[in-house]
Length: 258
Ligand SMILES: NC(=O)c1ccc[n+]([C@@H]2O[C@H](COP(=O)([O-])OP(=O)(O)OC[C@H]3O[C@@H](n4cnc5c(N)ncnc54)[C@H](O)[C@@H]3O)[C@@H](O)[C@H]2O)c1
Image (tube, rainbow, N blue to C red; front, side, top):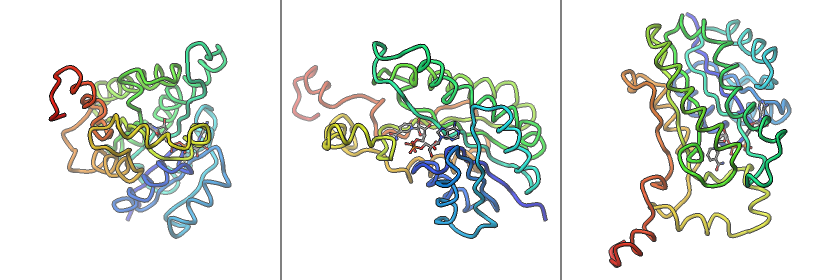
C-alpha cells in the first residue's frame, strides 16, 4: 500500500520537531526538512525509526532545494501534508531593519512557503492533501520584528490564496498563529533578559506562554480529517493574546474582576 507522507520544514527547531512527532500519529513517513542537516538528523533520530523520520537537507528559500525535497517526497509515497514551519526574525525594530534584512525575512517567512507549495502542488492535488503554514501573532498585530511581521501577515494571505485557487482540487490551506513559544529562537532575548518569559506571561490571558506541543496539536487538527471543511483560516494558538489584555481591561473598566 502507498505510504502517506508529511513534510515539515524547519523541523530541527523545537516547534518543527513537535509537529513532526505529532504528525507521525497519522502519517507513515515524516520528512524533516532543514537547512541544518546535522540538527535535522539528530531530531529525526530522537523521534523514532529512520524509515519513518527522514532528515533532508533543504534551504526553503532555494527553488532547486525545494524541488529536490518534492522529489524525495514523491519517491516515498503519497504526500498528504506540507507544513511550512521554517522561519526566523532578524531585526527588532524598523530602525534596525536594513534592506538586506527586509528581503531575507521576506524570503524565509513568506516566499519560501510559496516555493515549497509550488514544488509539491501536483502531489497535493493527487492526494487531495493540505498545507499548514506556521504564521505568528506578529502577522496579526504589532509586537516588534517588523520585516518578519510583514512577511507573516503576507503568509496569512498566501494561506487564503491557496485555499481559494486550489480548493477545487480538494487541497486545503490553513495557518496557525502561535504566540510566544519557548524555543531556541528566544536564546538571544533570554540571554538579554532571563525573565523574558515571566515578563511575557502577564500579557497572556491564560497566564502562560505556548508549548511546542500546543502548536503541533493545532497543526495535526488542521491537517487531519476532522478539519475536512476548514480551509483558508488562521487559528491563533496564543493563550488568548490576540483576544485582549486583562491589564488594559482593568485600567479601562476600573474593575477588579480582570
Ligand atoms: N518561538 C516562537 O515564539 C514563535 C512564535 C510564533 C511563531 N513562530 C514560528 O514558528 C516557526 C518555528 O519557530 P521556532 O521557534 O521553532 O524556531 P527555531 O529557530 O527554533 O527553528 C527554526 C528552524 O528553521 C530552520 N531554518 C532556518 N532557515 C531555514 C531555511 N532557509 N531552510 C530550511 N530551514 C531553515 C533552522 O535551522 C531551525 O531548525 C517559525 O516559522 C516561527 O516564525 C515561533
